[in-house]
Length: 454
Image (tube, rainbow, N blue to C red; front, side):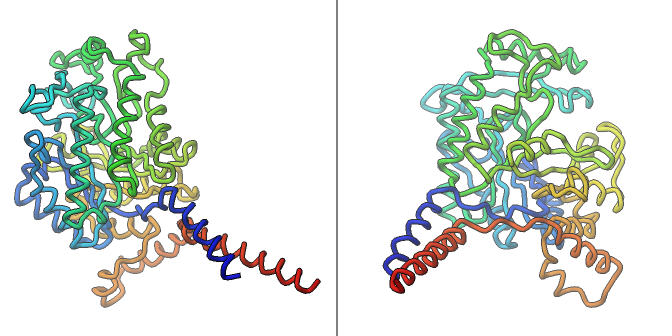
């Protein structure tokens, strides 16, 4: 019988190991370490981040860093900023969602000729944040996502980052990575697609014309996405991945035959890309939207992806405060140009809008909520309660420092009880393999003794 076990069990374990490992627990509240902080953050902003990372209930960080910051010259890497924040996260036992932006963070050397550049063709646009609502314009130069020089250098950069993280011992701290490489000004999956007419701003360039001249086709975009996701899969094969979508007009409205698609007539442009990513990362893909607001339902496209593709859901709070201020932060009402600051009550409502995308009575839950340090420091009780509502336990640090019951502690106790309704994580593949082997051995033992009895 021992011989039978040695034959069956390794086979089961081997089969399980061939598939992708079960995902690490992604749940939590993640503090955003944005691109402006990682490149030229002030001491005050850094101090605010350090304070936020020590607030009970903060589970991880979204570390956003530009490609041009990591590789300022072709083949020459600058690791100081990445190492600083990775070491900080590791020392505090925080999960890390690593996002390396392209878009406006595309390094300028990419467009130079050899030997100092890659020779990619530059495409220059003038865009406006929030579809022109801010009245501001900014210029950016990007490569077409399917540009072979661009894809080659992007893959090489990811390979080098993965190797560096392993060499410094911080690779294990990376819980998931943002699927970037097709970006405009943020880590979101999008390209410049505005015109002066669509934004009402004369300073905005005609992105549709620029892309048509560059030969844009939906099939070329999908081919580029295939190559980019292959690079992530190859270099970070044991990680989970997230993709931040723009549900409305994320890409230029150009059909496969090169014609312009009328407003509102285009099929969902995200669907082919999400389906492809889900095929590559089954059970390891998060679809998220970088906006939640009290009183506004959670983005339906995130919910639809969870229901039809089986992807995980996540959200990031809005950043409307940054539109009229040098400080990042979520608003809880108003408009992007006239934001209403949050209170403790409205900020908790904002967080719960993302945690319960359909309702508290529905089993769908967000895996994580990404938040700004200014809000974390302003509303620490809300952060801890949101942490518990995500189904996580009370942080040990909080238990150790709590001396007497308080109003906050009493409210958190009820939250812990309600969090028990969150579905438990599925057993991992090794557990399943062992159980299967034990069942087989039990059945075989029964057959063996029956034959002896006969």
